[in-house]
Length: 260
Image (cartoon, rainbow, N blue to C red):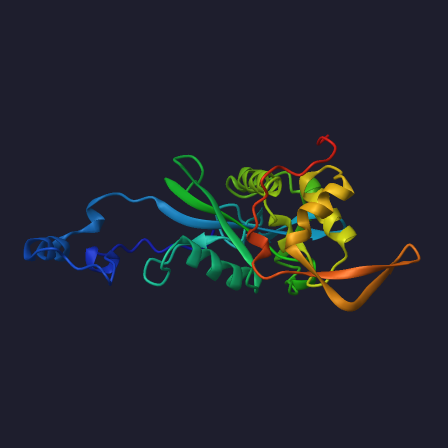
């Protein structure tokens, strides 16, 4: 979360520029409406940015440079700019650029979380997103202010309720990986089928049956002509994702050993 202006405006600031009042009476009502007459919560967006590092899911955290939770690790989120952000997703995209210096190829809204106790500055709510990015596409970060943490080694104490937000986002990612091609967004542009299976296994936390997996993902990929990778002394065909393959939904969950 970042600094927040307490300045409030009347409805003319908040009203959609495309909305047309149905009557002169409604136009007068909107012109005279004072939004500051009602107490409003603090409204933020918090994206959980996920990649794979050293065969583990990792999350990008930033060190807070202001109170509250000064010096604590937290998510790279911030307050919605009501003048410039068209919607929560626009705010999430902006915060990814400002605090992580990249555009995620996949961004999804998870849920909205709110309450009186989650922020010591006042009643607040946040719109939770997750973003996926392949390790090869991760830009350099300022290591003084940001760090990739594996899920197995997240800080014990984090800002606000960000640990719970991370847990919620990871549950959503793992649940969707059961029946969609979501983990494909963590792959580099070129990969072998073994690499692809391993990425799915790391997300799902279980081994998958190779034959069943390859039959399942066949519609997602296409071979790159004359492109092979040497693995275990045998050349392995290199593939790439077909356009829009990341949105594919499977009819049944992936088969494999049960999660431990």
